Length: 440
Image (cartoon, rainbow, N blue to C red):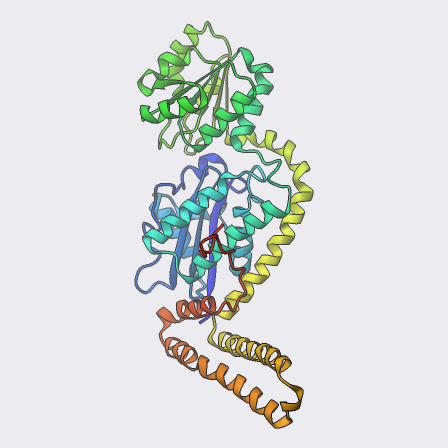
């Protein structure tokens, strides 16, 4: 019942934005990739796609061609060639895959270390996998453990206290270009999480006026209301561009929404005063040819790396502390993986029963009158305590042995028993005022 974990991905370090946007899977379901068909050694799949990375986590029986199988399915789904994807992709197996996912979830592998968005994005991807039924015993445990690791790192280090986002880096770049933002107008194209973060940072930087547009005008109005901004109908985008100095675009469009040819009238209306565009969308929202226009300055996500680099040195010490936590938790996950075999679980059950019997026996013996505690009585009580423990485990162990003969349900049954008896000693949430366990 050996278990194989494989992770295949692209990120901002291994592939430029023009490659990442070719292989984006943000609208794809976990079952859209033909990886879980009958006869496949893979049993579980999780896909997550963000502006800076696309990753596929798969679990199943060991097979030499697992990496290639995943890359081929991914490339074909995007209408691309496997060989091109293979030039930019990275692959991690088993504990290396576990360590990588823990680091990604904890934002240790992000362009900006400590940015909070990645955790929420992976939680959404996991929720989708649960809804589609592609997350089983291993992926469930792996993701819950990853979320726990991220929480530990936020709690036990200061890495999140100085965390910044791509949106923050974008605003920092705008400040470098214009110095004083108090006399500038900015427009946000898109009303998602990245745009909201950009709005917050722009207001903190003292922007004179903020405009928001979105294909769904109601969403633009709702966001504008929260940030004291001006909502703009998407149809009026190009009429309004001439009034702003800074444009930050982060839509989910599959094609560019601003072309170089669209800008001639806009620039003429501005008397060719400088305009600053930051495209933090993947795929890109803005035609790269805008950079050829006079007095137009366009930056995409990859251009923000310089701003991000300035923050990395301040986080090195905290990242090293976080890495130690990751290593501890990888070792813990390794122990759990090994426990998915039948023998370790039966051994752990028997040991737990024996430990509890000994503990309760000692408590009982302390309360007894020493005169009544003859060697014969002590021996009889020890035999009784251990016998009761073994009798109580007779049916759970029988259940496990029966399920071990059924490949499809063996791992889930072992995992269920380990959770029921808390054999992995997971922390129990504190009880609330009404006796309910409080989840974090």
